[in-house]
Image (cartoon, rainbow, N blue to C red; front, side, top):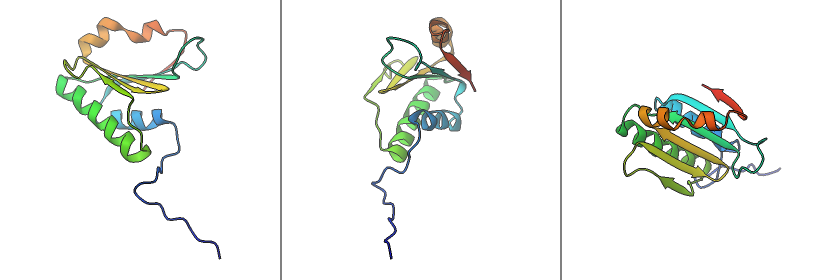
Length: 126
């Protein structure tokens, strides 16, 4: 009789795309205007996916950032390679290697308009 493998807390139980976990985290914490930009078909780009979301305040941006990190660590055992922008909280960037997460306050998102820079990519708004 074959032994059944029992999962432990240290095992990575998540086997899907890290972008799915990130989007789940953003939606669970009330992220506004979640946008996924698929860059896989764009030449000379070093990452596959941009995820862009708006937080309604500095506190909300920080909450979104913290929860994305918490969920990806807990469910997939993955930490971002870099976190930038927490000092002012207007635009926070989380680098998950192939997936880049941009968390903006409304004014910064309107000003930078990242979606327009990648208008030749597949863009999905949730």
